[in-house]
Length: 129
Image 1 (spheres, rainbow, N blue to C red):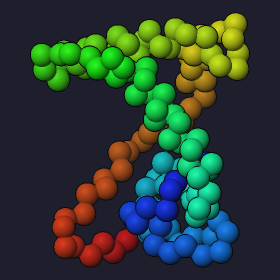
Image 2 (image 1 turned 180 degrees about the vertical axis):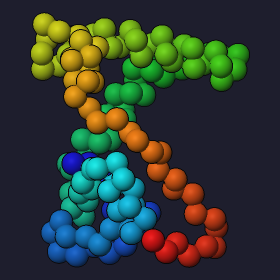
Image 3 (image 1 turned 90 degrees about the vertical axis):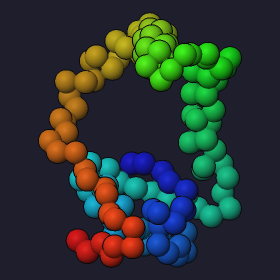
Image 4 (image 1 turned 45 degrees about the vertical axis):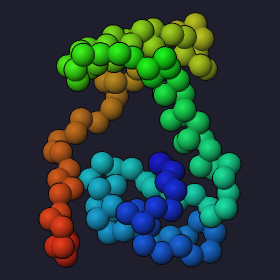
């Protein structure tokens, strides 16, 4: 399950409570990657805060202080190294194991992605599934 704010590219209509009419193209993406979208309740900032908190954590972990790199290639090398460092930290719930250890155990259980979703629709083109 993945929680989304009620952005127009995801939600076509907001009804009572959590009931929504999701954009058909977005539902096609969700069906392709087998996840269930759930929209945040309007005026319920605590729901969206969980997602925004994670964004803030990533900004702090990767971009504070702001890395200085000569080009995108060197930035990507630095980010890869930093991500490996972060993966070596203790898992937040299983503190005797690293995040990398937990992921290594989980990874073989994940379904492989068989085909990449092509989300491209030319501007002005009406998408018809």
